[in-house]
Length: 140
Length: 438
Image 1: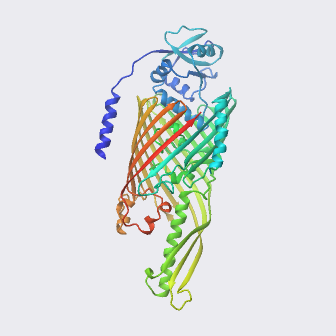
Image 2 (image 1 turned 120 degrees about the vertical axis):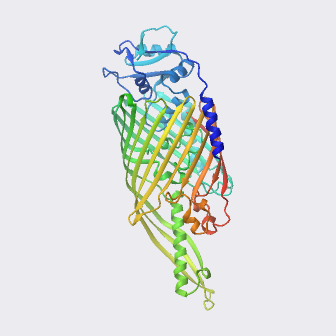
Image 3 (image 1 turned 90 degrees about the vertical axis):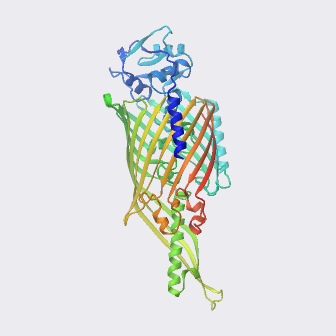
């Protein structure tokens, strides 16, 4: 049994060596958000429902994409997770009554319109998508 | 049972089909239906009929959450479950509470809440959260489910930022537990074991009175009746440190509760007597038994997620105390690897070990009785796969290979008590389960 488990662990370690392709996203916020930059840790806490206030004490309203490359990149590169783990976190919150997930959108266009109209909102889009009524939040 | 769950299913399917998740901006509806199958070799494991193979493994739940204001949300989940001869599909309130989040670092919940224990107890019924069909039985024992599942009372929670040291999620709980012992296999095991032991003692006393060897009398346990158990209070604390190293989380949870109860044990002893019209004398007994104790549970977890792998070490110690002194302490733990190969496929392997008596992991006490040492423990390897057919439908398959019988329930395997010789050390289990969720 020990040899079997050792083989499994070695297999996992070898598989860990593979690297994902790196793409980029930009974080966008409503124009009234007074902050221009954010720590990566704070971004993670926002999207896990653990940080709900901007530094000026106004409400943070995170929104996200339902799926797609931009969503996958955001979750892996900025939240340091993967889409399955991220979804599992929110499923647990919902099915145990402990939290309500961020509102999600089918397209970047819909997401950006919502962020532009909702004070305190934060979202993300592909780095090549032009801004429209929102501003970029830089990562510290 | 099936009529109860069928009606519940219909409501859920209509609800799920009609509304999906977010029925209004501040109103959320979710649910799931699961159907499983269990088949074990040699012994009945977890349920009374797994050796034959059984589909009596059905779960369904529907939850509704409302967020009337930014800081408050209220929710309820109704659940029906059929697991062997436990619960039998009775629909009950699984959780129901109001949550007031005062600040990010402190919030309060009141109502019926899921109990924390280890890293995964809160979501133990939620198939969509994991790859294995069942969580490792060394820590998440199905037989102890009744008093590790939920409490009624008040909880505090929050997330504390510790700067470069990461963040801390904490929970504190206080209240009571409303446990139905009538259909619980855990209590049934205790009651039956006590009844069998009491019958043996009674037989010895009767034989001594006649001055004959005990093997010349026939003892018959008639089980138990009028069982009641109470949990006047419970409390617990849990802290999860989200370390600065991405993906590394450490948890410690502790809970303590008071348990009281009573039941009647029934039995008869037959003594051969040629002068009696029946050919034997009959002695029957009907005794009331009590218990009054405190149970402590402490668990430690290390979870490390990197890329598509998650590694988990978890251990638990379960140590009841009784007014007359300490009684048996048990412990267990496991090491698990989960690999999410693609968003639609994952596999999982874990090694789990459980010891009935933490002070005698090698089974010395059994050896003194001339029984195999593997009566004292259950060590097993589980290999499972999960296929997410769609975003709302998944299928799981799992095989387990066990060494030892320390995790078996005696009431489902009475031969372990009555004829412990000739049992199998190695045995296996197959599980399959499908879940629809929305």
